[in-house]
Length: 78
Length: 213
Image (tube, each protein chain N blue to C red):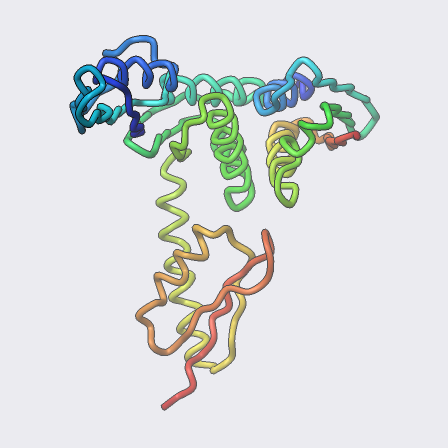
């Protein structure tokens, strides 16, 4: 399963500067960590009011991760 | 459909101005209504009055339904979910999409959380790309209708329990649409009163007994 692709597609469709979107996938034994970096102006666009957008992104990744039994964590870096 | 009013020396002049302001290339894409033909003062005498027009135009350069389909299918395929669009209806202010999938449970998620997240995400992306204000509603295997029925039933059962025991009962956290449904279901039940409590995603409905007369 390519979580990076999924997150990249959603995030790039939401921000004003898709060219500045960076995602690093850190594969662990029990979990996969996705580190997301966007420009300063776009941070609000991926977090949302009360973290609503970030929560939706996490819900969607976790739904696609259910079969693998692995935990996928999304970290938004600033 | 949006409306824009503009003035110019003549009707033609005003039309040209509107086309530039609104960035409409083809006049056929808008409907123009002349409010005032305007009057030009002859040789500077007499009162000149500007022409005034009203332009009705659509700000959708893209087909919203088509874009919604594209975005939704892209997300689902990247999620590794095999799903298809069974029905797509586009109205004046809404786009309704019914999905079908062998993994519908995965698409719905716990208490509809995944379906809610997908709907929210598709709305965000489409409105970001088109500035459209159309609301997109996602459904799969009539989940929404079923959930509505189940919620109504649950509300009535709890109301009965509250009325019998005289003790208030707080339901689990729900989204605004579901809370509204509970309020509506018990609106005319004079044995109980409903009230929402808490903040944000933790907001829940409390059903309390009415003090007996």
